[in-house]
Length: 285
Length: 261
Image (cartoon, rainbow over all chains, first blue to last red; front, side, top):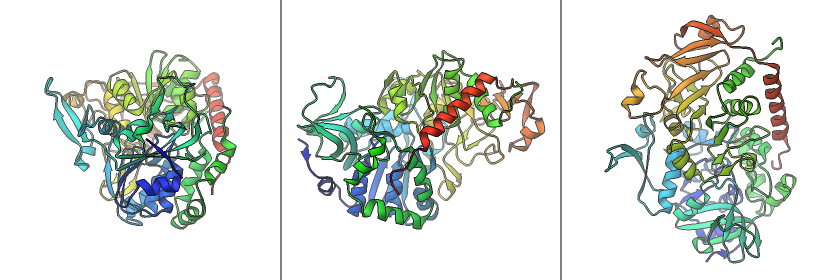
């Protein structure tokens, strides 16, 4: 059963140096607060998995916390490039990072295979393109029935997955709504899962039985962090802070400015600060 | 007709015109997103727009900044998980048109959005393929839209992120790809279609006021022109107004005040 703890405890209980970790959120419900807590606790040598590594991985990479990144789109969504990630790949600053690059279809299938307990994912993809040349984890298999050649990639099995979600009930079941992305698969693929939520409610009696609910017994720890996805958003709670994504492009372009920003907004901040950051973005419910 | 318009506006509007009510379109962010929504707001109100975040049948009032903006979900017919999107809908063959942009493209519609320079030691590390590699092979056909430049339209792309017609001819069939691939390239200067045999992109229409020299100057390969090159009809007042209103709504919505920093 999921145990309700503080965010500080949730991160300390579940993440270790050298872990393979996914902070997932496909352009929605991105666990920024959890990532910032991991940054404050100063983990090292992490292998970061994410379909769309945006601001939070840019920050971790910029601080030298990552030894490897497994990803399918390393951009600032809708804005442009990830500048700390670029600095690491192009100039090895602040350190060299290993890169394992896939397509979205591959990553989505690989998470699903992880959740399904399979060793690999099989799908129709990567035809004619160059990623298989630079990523040895992209292979092919022949369909035993039709002979069709299909792409195969290893299943994703993180040591820990962190996601943000709308709410938990008292028992610790978690509701994910809106763009559900890869949240459920990322939780079920992981050895341990940590969820931050906007709020705890008494029960889910008013929610459709077909809603995307992740049962309490699949989750290690839950922490309540209102605004915990900011500058990403939580459907039904607050809107995406597009201005912050645009601002990140400037902040991340300069090594010193980046450090200053991290000092002020992460190292000297707390999980409680997230509620203030979304105050002006709250949506009518 | 007499109204002034920019090359970018012409590009978006020409791209929008290529879409119809019956299309099920997988929408890339940026120029493709603008074109698809202009089509929806003008002549193709029933077009089905799909964003890779899982939103099917979206009808946003402003253009999303990212493919995962909340409005895409709120206005959708349904929103599915990302694995379902890529497995059932894209790989399952439900999408008629994939609409892509490109950092680099070659004459056969092969696209690079991964790196400028060598993969191991890139000059510029770009975001990468995202959904594009499988969009390019699984959608019924591919439309591409981008502004012309010799940096973007090159003799040889630095990295093949998404497969177009490969080396041309029947290269797709030889790889077992059954979809049509790139059938339309719309730039800020012209409309291009692949030669039926060689599959090389060929200029079939130039936008008003554009010359062959201008098209060649901004393209890194020797441009082929069709026997008859038409003039793209200028944007109508309705098309221009719809586009400008959409852009104004979008800019206002995205400005806002940043809460951090």
